[in-house]
Length: 263
Image (cartoon, rainbow, N blue to C red; front, side, top):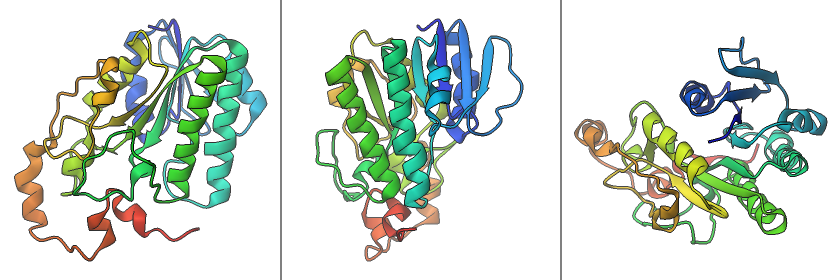
């Protein structure tokens, strides 16, 4: 594992949990966000930095062995805000990684890259993208950027198409898309520890019986999810006993994201 690991987006929903969990797996954990992440804990370095600030990213990546990138705009917003953080900002991060010789990044992508596939389909990472909004397009850009930096500079990336990250699934749809906090930790650690990843795309999902996603093409990561949303099926199916198949949010994997109007 890395001696000094950088976690971006440490003030976000996933980042706050990973901050606690990753500290045991590196000599030093550098945590960063555009928002204040609070005081440094033992073994931590805290840096407030914006992704769109290229100079700040260059300083942030200095002395780092590997990166877990959970930073950026985490939802559908205006194109301008997504452009700054998720597109310009991610390019700044990769350029800083290249200059400082960082060899492995684990980057948050999203299920929404394939959000316009139907919920009655099972897909893998080889299918053509079908993004469901500007946010999804920015995540697709990130996957392609990671592939470019591997092909051109040899920087390895695992792009995580993260599903529904919750303590437990909240809706019937999430019986397929849920990923638990424990499985997220397993996925990130597997992505950091695998000997060779090149550029790998993997769906961030637990071992759900009704999953829409086939991760066999990413078996080399050694990710073995342990949790299954089906334990919550009876309760969630009772809450939604019938489905409106005329509602695109019910039909497509992206859920409510497929209904978003451009902002």
